[in-house]
Image 1 (cartoon, rainbow, N blue to C red):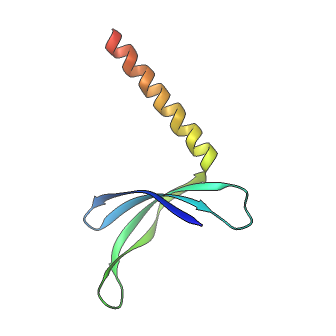
Image 2 (image 1 turned 30 degrees about the vertical axis):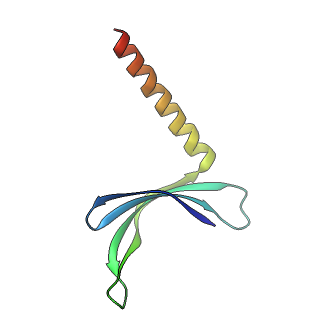
Image 3 (image 1 turned 90 degrees about the vertical axis):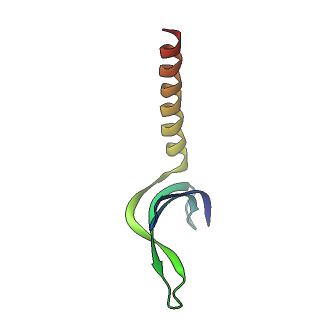
Length: 83
C-alpha cells in the first residue's frame, strides 16, 4: 500500500515525493522521501521515475524527528522575539 502525502517540484525535470508506504507482512508504516526524475514512456508521455536519492524511515521515528525539530525551532523563535 502506498499513499502520496505531498509532492514538490524542485526543478523542471525533478520532483520530491513524501509518501506513506506499508509493506505486506510488516507491522510498520514507513515514510519515504524520494526524488523522482522526469522521463518518457513509449508514447512520449511524461512520467516520473524514482531515483536513488531518497530515504525511508519508520513513520513513528519520522514524526519523532520532525516533532523535536519543530519544537526546538519554535522555542528558538519565541526566545528571539522576546529578547
